[in-house]
Image (cartoon, rainbow, N blue to C red; front, side):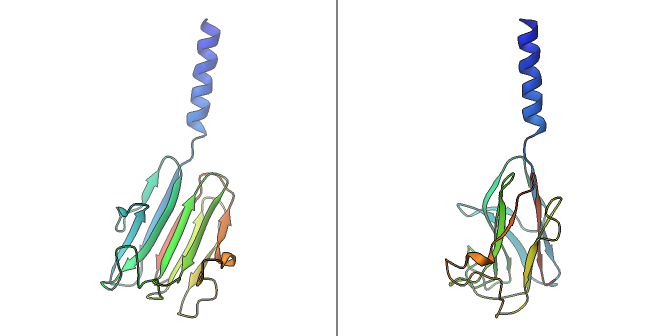
Amino acid sequence: MFTLFKLMSLASLAAIASAETHTIVLVNNCGFGTPTLLLPGNDLVSTGAPFTVNGPIRGAIAYLQTGGCGENGEGCTLVEATLLDGGSAADISLIPPHAFSVTSGFGFFDGCDGAGTDCTNSGCPMAFRQPDDTFAIVGCGAPSVNLAITFCD
């Protein structure tokens, strides 16, 4: 009985130790506007502070609220992200009703360092403009990877 309890305790500790954790950091170098991070359902989770979750982050969107953006970033440059152990992805979307508003970019860190992209003008070549522009997705297979999103970088 003691051995079974001990094995179950060790298994529980191993599961806790290997649980994923992700952080999204918003950096505003513009000198104006409010960085905005939403999760599905219009749940505002950050207006500039780092956002950390013990678990996956699915379907996050971020944009710089300049006063001209809609509730889901309509009219502005949008960064979309899903952070999952072994299968994270992020992209920049200019699919209407989204449109270029400010220079925006992202990069993974603490895994897949250097993977990311920037959108510096309305002709941004690495942005979604149509739903099938999958070339714009930047993936990362590292566990517990984090993401920095920068406006006016």
